[in-house]
Amino acid sequence: MADQKKEVINHFDSWSATYEAEVWHRDEFFHKNLQRWVFNSIEASKDQVILELGVGPGVYYEKFLQGNHKVIGIDVSFKMIQVTSKKLKEKGYNTLNFVLGDGEFLPFKEETFDITNCIEVLRHLPQPYKTIWRVFRELRRVISQDGDILVNLPNILFPLNLVSVIYYMIPRFFTRLFNKKIGFQYDQNVSFPHFPVLYNEPEDHMYNILFIRSLIRNTKLKAPLLKGVFFFPACPKLLFSLFKKIDRVLGLSPFTFLAYAFLIKLKRV
Image (cartoon, rainbow, N blue to C red):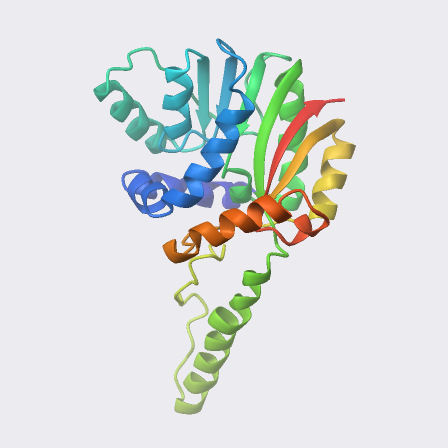
């Protein structure tokens, strides 16, 4: 697993300089909807101690500072922390608390935080179906008795993921067949274009609702809110209003299991 974790770190180190522009700005509608949910979840409380797990470009971190919260950010990528720290200092934020580390081994005492925010992070875990158990136990350990853990997890059953069969696997099959016919040695590491809604990168992983419910129950957490979101990265602007309506109708319905991702508020049992 050490090699897989190193791959994730190297990936985000190399992406740190352009990550915000390529991901947050490109998928602005998607991220603004996630942010709205996060800040509505903590709107009633001020001056809380918040752990931002997976600082990334510091978008959430900065907004927490603007809300007069005490924030500690942790990330596995040292270069990402450097880029974010420099950006925030240039904006006039002089008191920044960043820690190099990961969610499996949080370097904090028990019940340290009122809120832990972990958005668009847990899909990057190496060996995801093993590692996520340790991460959830650590999140439970460091959250206060009445605190909230905010996470999102992408859903493997989202219908558009079926597009991967057409857009990704079938082109690869025919390319291999064509290469074989012409006597060309096929490179197993060749990269293919990825449909933008899919998580096809080596470090990206998805989960399903049954696994998530088992994960919550067996790590001695409870979920007062588990909401399905049907909007997705690279959603065409033309469809924004449609997916807002779908979200309102289906987000808390029995059809949640078909959502693109799950927004979950967790508490200690």
